[in-house]
Image (tube, rainbow, N blue to C red):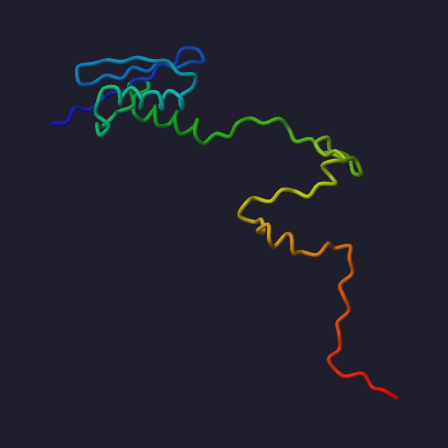
Length: 139
């Protein structure tokens, strides 16, 4: 019969205390958040020796409470500072005159091979006039 491994989570201030027990052993650790605590619990389970074991994660003695808290943390977006919109006509802080003169760097998958870049004519030179294949009329 397969023995389940139990991971118990207890919040202590901003940190989480994790206790993983099973196979006659008990390991403990701390982590800064519930997501990190869940990752640390996986590491402790590996230390117990069986990567294929069933692990029951409990918060307040309930797997449902743990799942709810964990999924809320995973799906909650971080709080970002409000976006600053510059007034019209102003230059954003990140752009400088040097950055405005340079071409943006393309990802390697979008770059042309060097041989093609070398063959490209500069845009400032006019294209040569097309020659006519019809013979010139002599008067």
